[in-house]
Length: 222
Ligand code: MD3
Ligand code: FE
Image (cartoon, rainbow, N blue to C red; front, side, top):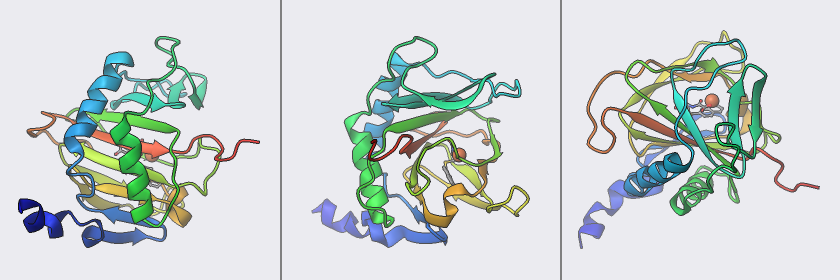
């Protein structure tokens, strides 16, 4: 009964917006799954705690990160890479919580990329003031595979540039439940996140989380 009343608000296609060639914004796509996703983050962080990693240039990142899946993204003085184990413990990364893969695959399909099977999920945690400078995601092996991002907790302003670092960046506000599927020509576009503004959020006070689902290795390893 109430499900029927609210169906139009949660219907995936209702909020589908193409923001660049191959990039699709699904407003509110993961709203219903937010509690399960936040529980999943807690479970992952219990086994692989959030940490502030160091860039090859020696800067400590303001965003705290952890990973799950068969591969995790890491950075240290030696460079950026994916690896199967958590450098903090030497243990394999926790597996993807069940709710994670389901949302990523469904969102990718809604965005026009059926059959997406992520092998890595990077979990970013932003406290007020944390930011992510403009960068490309190019440590994955197959750029024909999209990246799916899910925003949780406090709102943020996403910076979305173009194929060149100097291309002007659009500012796109993202709130809890918003999902973006980045594929096709936009897959290698520069992007970042403006410094998080302080605020309160009932589900994640005072933090923002972002899940990025990736296919880091080859889809059909030979
Ligand atoms: C556009 N994270 O972890 S997700 C990252 O909100 C990262 O934490 C940001 O950038 C965050 O690498 C933004 C959105 C995103 C992810 C991958 C992209 C946008 C992208 C790849 C290509 C183009
Ligand atoms: Fe990125």
